[in-house]
Image 1 (spheres, rainbow, N blue to C red):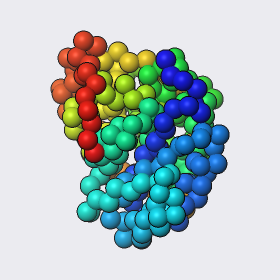
Image 2: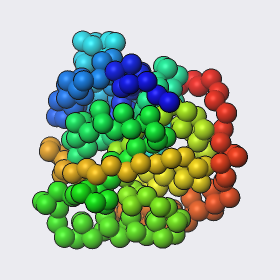
Image 3: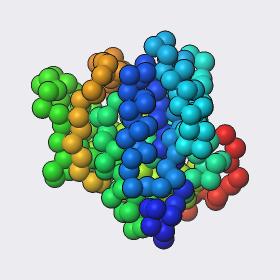
Length: 258
């Protein structure tokens, strides 16, 4: 059972690639939440727009509130999150948040999500449960592709969550430790599917909470049709890799190094 949100160590992991115009605003929005001590961990993949430099300036101004992992080259979403999760656990996080830096995931959802961790092992910001909603500005083709990718992953893997491809999640420390980050091999957007599937196979309690998924405020979406098509066939790899997992195979908590 978690303590109240104001008494736990919360680290928000933000993978970034060309988010120089969003990062400072996102950090300020997160720090404005009624979550004392919340820290931000930026994982930047050598963004050519200078996101890394923005992150360094913020870290210099707020050394106790923001950290940075600099990676050489565009290493992909999955490995960025795993690197961030490892660092967050090593730094003592009780709660680890994964979310986008472009405001498609509103920080305002975090306080009630974190409170729900008293009863659940992971809370998912879901676009596809009742009252969940996609931005009205999305083109019909983009909406159709997103729905197809989600239903495809659910059908192949038997994922019970309505939003199997959700990228907005709040994890208990013990859940990430039990999953075992060394088990996770997917990069790109299928990482979200793999984490959802492994959590279900290991018997963790998953709660989906409806969100309004806003289109990014600044910049262009990085989710292209080729990226989604690649993710589709990689779903089969996830099925083969983890199809026999059971709750008995949860990993014991181990010392974690970044």
